[in-house]
Image (cartoon, rainbow, N blue to C red):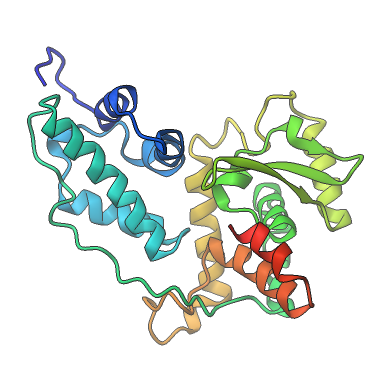
Length: 266
């Protein structure tokens, strides 16, 4: 790739991939790129991306998603590089080549008890962003990316419902508001913004995803994770995704049908 400008970004070679590659899953692939890769690595000069950058990316993702999902995102970056190199669009190296896949253990055993949920809600109640995010997560079992992409027009207070975007399956579904505090938080928020504005959009925070991640990780550590004998044991570590897992586990324990749980979990 010959260019006059000094910087060749990952966004550039990703755009080339999306514009020229013809595969059935391209829309889903692009959605995942935009969800978690673009904001972290998109503006990076690919000529200087290295093994350390990719490992740092792995660790950042691990605070929100499972090792299996982290591996999937690394595969997306690798595929984009390989395609650009193979087609002679980019003349460089693939920085993911020396990055080992994370060990995958699909059994995530940690869920929050009812008293732990109460402790968490108490810890976030003075911060409207965290309070709204945690309550939506615990009400709908939605993934972090889904919650962060809710707009005012997705909120139906009359039906106590939210239209949610499932980026993993490239679909939408309905989630329900299950407590009065969340209802009032949503009502206050939608009164302040326009129809196409995101709920979680504030000029004081340019990286809302990162802000929520940092704040919640600190709270999770203070409330739960400081007790871990092995801080790297992801099965017992409370992360953002634990909120989703907690909701689904409690539904199962309360006798909800397997069909309903699977329809949310997919």
